[in-house]
Structure formats: C-alpha cells, structure tokens
Length: 308
Length: 317
Ligand SMILES: Nc1ncnc2c1ncn2[C@@H]1O[C@H](COP(=O)(O)OP(=O)(O)OP(=O)(O)O)[C@@H](O)[C@H]1O
Ligand code: SF4
Ligand SMILES: [Mg+2]
Image (cartoon, rainbow over all chains, first blue to last red; front, side, top):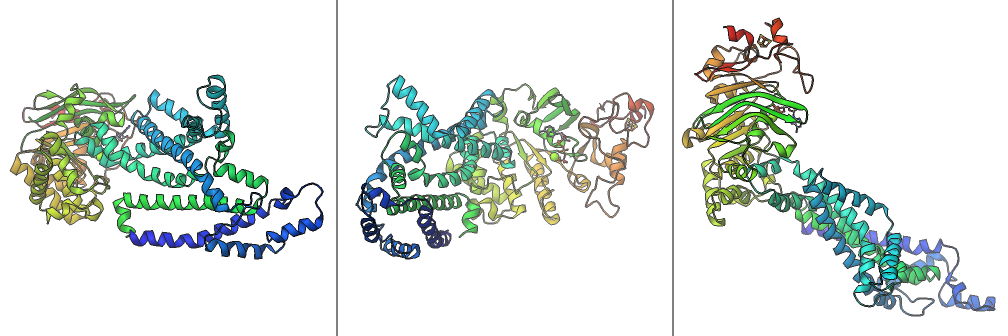
C-alpha cells in the first residue's frame, strides 16, 4: 500500500511537467497579448517594445517557458502583468472563496447524492425510485449557470430571501452551492444507485438475507460499503473541482474566487496569472484523482493486498 | 415431519416455473433433491427461505409447513426470525457467498448475535468452536482473515459455519459442492452428513450428482420442469425407479461406480419457460408416452410409506 502510494506520487512528476507545458502554451494560442491591455490610447511603438522587453515577451516562446519553469521550480509563479502583484498573492487572496464554495458544494452534493442513491436503490422500481431517477436525469442535463440564473431570479430577485450576488455572509453561499452542486448530486446519486442495485444482486447479499438480518442493516452496513468504491473514484475526480469546478457559478453570482480571477486574467491576456491559475486548477484535479485512487485501494481488502 | 412442502406453486408474474412441488424432511434425515438444470430446485429452496419476494417472485399456491407453522402466510417479521435462526441456507458458490470486504469471523458471528442474542465475545467464542468442529485449522487466525485469503473448500466450510451459527434445525444446501475440487467435494459432503447424524438436523441437499445422492441421502425428490415427479427412499429409488425420468437418470450414471452423475444424456431437450407441453411435461422425451400423457397432468400420489410418483403408468402399476 505504501509502495503503491509512493509509486503514484512519483508519477506526479512527469504529469506535472506535461501539465506545465500545456498550461503555458495554450494561452499563447489565443490571439492578442497583455500589452494591448496595458497601453493607453496614443502610445508609441517604442513604448510597446519597452513594455514587451520589461516582461520578457520579446523573447522566443521556448525561452519564456524555460524562464517560467525555472522560477516555478523555486516556487515563484511570477508577477501579474496587469495588476503588478505576485501571482501567488493573488491566488492566495482568491483561493479561500473558491474553497468555501467548492467544499460546501462537494459536501452538499456528495451527501445528498449518496442519500438519494440509497433511497432510490432501496425502493427500486417504485415511484420513489422513478422520482429520484427523473431528478437525476434533469440534474445531469440542466447547465449549472442556467440553474444559477434561475435561482437568482426566483429566490433573490422575486422572493428576496438571499443576496443576489457577492460573498458576504453565509446566506450568499446558499444559491451558488445549490447551483454548483446539482450536477454532482445527480452524478453521485446515479453511481450510488447503480452500484447498490448491482451489489444487492450478488450471492453474498442473498446469504445475508438468509441470515435474517434486517434489510436496512444489510443495505447500510454491507451493500452501501461496496457501492462506495465507485463513488470514491468519482469523488476523487471531483475533489479537484472543489477549486475550479464552480468557475461559471462564481461568474454568474459575481463572487470573488479563482474562477473569477482566471476569467479576468484570460480577458486581459495576463499570461503569468492565467498560467498560475490553470496550473493550480490542473494540479488540484490530478492530486484529487490520486487521493481517490489511494482511498479506493485502501477500502478494498483485495486491492490492499494486490497493491502492497 | 420437520418440513412439509405440499403442492407448492411459484409465480413470477404470469409465469410459473414451479407448480407441483411436494416433499418433506424430518429431523436427522437427509433429503436429496435432484433434477436437471432449470427444474426449479433453487426456487424451491428460495421459497422455503421466504426470499422469493426479493427476486420478484411469490408463492401462488400450496403450503410450506415448518414444525407446524405455515410459512406461506407468515408475516415477514416472524419469517426473519426463522431465517438464519431455525432454517439456514448454504449456497452453491463459496467464492461469492461471503462479503469480500468483511473479515471472516464477524460474518459467522452475525447469526448468533441476531438469533441467540449473544454478545460480541460470546459470539466469537461460538464461531471459533464451530470452526474447530468443521476442522478448520487455526480458527483464531482464520477468524481475522478476509475471504479472498482462503481456498474454495475453506470458504465453503466458513459458509457452513455461518449457517450453523444461529443453531438451525433445518439446513438447505443448494449444490454445496458444485464449485469445488472433486477431493474437497467429498469432504464437504461428509461434514454435512456428520452434522445431520450428530446434531439431528434436517438437511435438504440439492445436487446434480447421483453419486452424492447414493452416498449421503436417506430419501430423494426427483424434479422435472418445476414438478416433483418421484419421491422415494434412496435404496428403492436406485433399485426400482418408478418414473420413466428417474429410470433414464439412473441409466445415465456411469457404470464404473457412482462418482460423477451426469444428467445430460437423456435424449431430447428440457422444455423451458413458457413452452411447457400440456399434460405430463416429460412426454416429449418419454419412451412410454401414451395419448392421455399429452392431456392430463399426472398427480404425485404419495403413499403411506412416503414414496410417490407422478406418472400415469405408475398409477396403474
Ligand atoms: N428470478 C427469476 N425470475 C423469473 N424466472 C426465474 C427466476 N429464477 C429462476 N427462474 C426460472 O425458474 C426456472 C428454475 O430455476 P432454478 O434456479 O430453480 O433451477 P435449478 O433447478 O436450481 O437449476 P440449476 O441446477 O441450474 O441450479 C428456471 O428455468 C428459470 O427460467
Ligand atoms: S405420464 Fe406418460 S409421459 Fe409422463 S412419464 Fe409417465 S408415461 Fe411418460
Ligand atoms: Mg439452482
């Protein structure tokens, strides 16, 4: 198990390298550059060159990448061209808002999703199951930004129960969490339901019933435990989205956060800031998936042994 | 009789895969249930355990009396007290019969804690005793293992220990040896026989293997297409099989001993599902078929000896 974990951690190095390449070059594929955003009307071409030289934008892309990578290895993400502040400071400043929304949405969607999946599986084939399955279908097709706008309209504008936007107080978190969490509920509920139903068909579950154990105990102590294995994999993939999954939601609700920071940086072609944000988000997703894998392997005694 | 099943009929929607099952077993007795694949042996076991609703079926007729109580109309809460307590089940495949994510010991403990009201340590002590009785080496360390760390034969012993944990009076073993090596098969059958002789359990032993029937059973129920076609003491069955299907079955046993029975050598195919012939279901394959066999269903007539046969010709005999 420890060897398995170490091996997987070691694999992160090449992954990190590839991600840094993609993150760096992808932004340079977008037309336009940060200098346009820095120039006032009527600046001369000389001034333009001056600025380009100041930020190293006059050198070749490969040179720029190597410089960026060299700094990165010492922990320096560079300085925002537009805002003039260290990228790490900007990220650190915005991260708590994203984490707050992301963690709340993840917890909300996971717990609700598991509960919905367990209930649907336990009442398989009844109206309760139909209702939950219908909701799952709806939840996985409705785009979160559209739901966000709808929620704002109903609960903030018409009913006035919660703030329209911003990040002041916990009430401002309710609608974004629902909007960001709905897709997750649908996904987790679907996986939980299918995994529960499939597990319930296995021989050992028949024997558990043959022992006379109460069905709810069998569902919760045995079947759910097996059904959690695929759910944990999905959670691993979603942990990473805690940071960046709510990009559009942050935008819709005008909340500060990594998503808003990234979108602004993209619009201004603020290369170092875009690269810093993307790198953070990508690594969060990768590390999340890794955590999911390790937890999953640790849950199953057969894998625990095979991967020792 | 500890258990009597009379004219049991099982229904899945409009489809009745089992419709004339009559059999019985007493304390200290082994009833073998034989018949080709799909003849309804497992469904009969499932019905006795009261687990049909879990797979979408129901008892549509007949009765299942256990120690004087009719189980068909018993409320689920009372049925659950019998299940694993007074009636226990052993299934075919030990590889899949244990929860792979739970240690062995606690899986055996469950029934004792539930039905005998034992605490954690008392249940553990009981499980260790049972494991020792079943000749599982080093019970204390096996107790803490996970199922995948055991061989198939060991796992089947654990499944048997699990079935015994609630101190049952009736044991239903559904092909308990089919998934095991030949040498291990004999050991498991011997363990079951010993249990019946020593503890006075009633055992229903479902099997494909006529050799096992000859070696272990007291009485036999022969099933064909959802019906019991012959019920007899084991010696009578082998010496004077009365139903043409039983006769064919016995002819199919290899001459050199009775180690491996095979049931596939009877000419013709087993009718399946909805395409059952009218009258006697064996009529398309029967060498002695008459015209009334295609119209009238032969009833299983059980005599005072407990022997019976469902065939128009045997009736006259
Ligand atoms: N859950 C179910 N739903 C509908 N029909 C079923 C179901 N289970 C079994 N059957 C039908 O009942 C028939 C008898 O099945 P059963 O499992 O009792 O046979 P069996 O005698 O145990 O066979 P085998 O020797 O292969 O175990 C099968 O042919 C099948 O068509
Ligand atoms: S009833 Fe007729 S068809 Fe059926 S077994 Fe007897 S003789 Fe054969
Ligand atoms: Mg079967």
